[in-house]
Image (cartoon, rainbow, N blue to C red; front, side, top):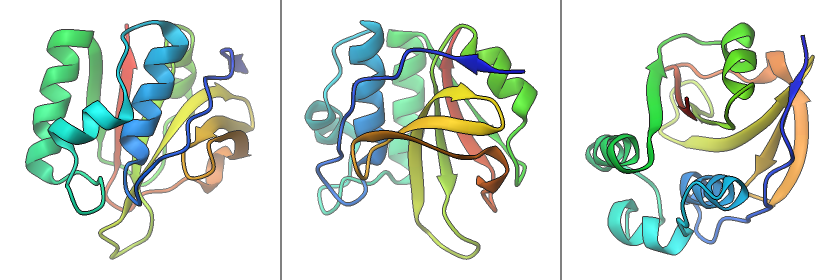
Length: 150
């Protein structure tokens, strides 16, 4: 099956590891869900050195998004994404996915997904462009954090 939403607002991250905040800004500006900015999110949740998230800040951010913006999240503890799950969520919402980039790496990266067929269509915050990759090439050794609205 194929599911597509309008491509989101393009947003390039401003710090090395602020991809998550750039994706949230793009998502909320595209949907008018809120007026979140990367800079404000970094001020409250990002690490000052590089804009990344630690476990404590991620937990606090997830709670805040759920209670104030009705953005749900879950850690899916598998190495591959469930295509049916992504398609179901895309019918109602963009999907923000945060994944571990490599086995043994401490680096995680975020993408804002807006479509799926044999490919994932997403906003890539490193470049600030909308692009796509094979659905089956997105893996994460320690699972995926997924964010969506209902």
